Amino acid sequence: GVDALASTPSSVSTQSYKYEVDIQEAQTKSTFPIAFDDLITRAKEVLSPEIEIGTKDGGACLADDFVFCAAVVGPIPKKEYLAALGSFKLTDSFDIDQNFFGFTVDPL
Image (cartoon, rainbow, N blue to C red; front, top):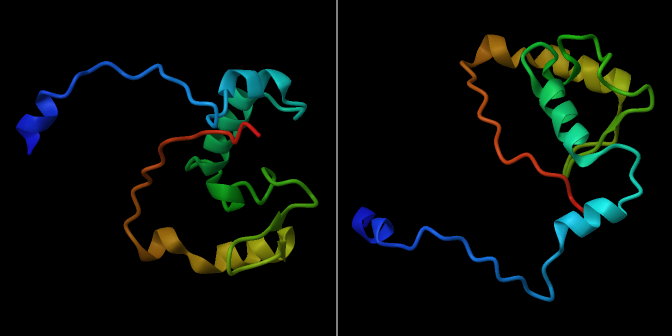
C-alpha cells in the first residue's frame, strides 16, 4: 500500500549497465541538425492549443514534404492530412483536456 511506498529509499540508483545508452554521450555524438532540447520545445509548440498539430495554423508548422505515417494509417501527404484533421472537429465533439508528459528524444 501507500505506507510501503513511504518507506522506500528516496535515492535514485546511479548504477549504469553496459546495455544502457549513455544519453549525454549520444547527444554529444549526434549529427542530427537540431539540438535535443530544441526538438522537445518544437514538439510542445506544435501540440499547443495555438497550433494543434497544424489545424490552427493552416499547416504552417509542417514541412511542405510532411507525410503522416502511423501504425495502421498512412502514409498521408500534408494536404490530405490537414483535410482529414479539419474534418474530425474533435474539440467540438469532445471535452478534451490535453495531458502531455514525458517528452524525450531518442538518443540514437
